[in-house]
Length: 134
Image (tube, rainbow, N blue to C red):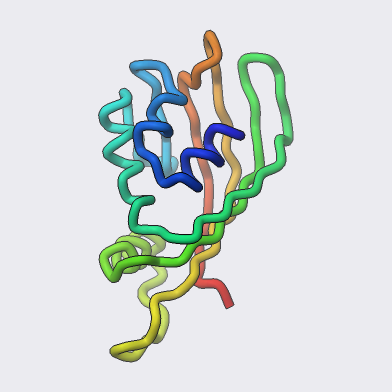
């Protein structure tokens, strides 16, 4: 989780992909999976559209080669593109905004379950929800 936190806060796709085995899998939703470091890095590029990222976590279970953690993230949306991605991915539509209104600060809260071998992640699954910060 320390590596996950560091990669997210640094907004670094290569750092994120390096947490995984060459054929590691990351289920960013129950229905989407990125496999292999190239897909992982490509997916993680979207965090470069975030600014002032703050990640906290609590390890809930650690059983050697598996673990689970609760994580919490806040970030400033840095582009209209990212805001549109968020709006489409949540299925809740866009919150009310007028032209020229600032982009929101987002809050994400989730759980991560991971499996490891030889110190690298073989598979991670996350369940999460997001909303604009009040």
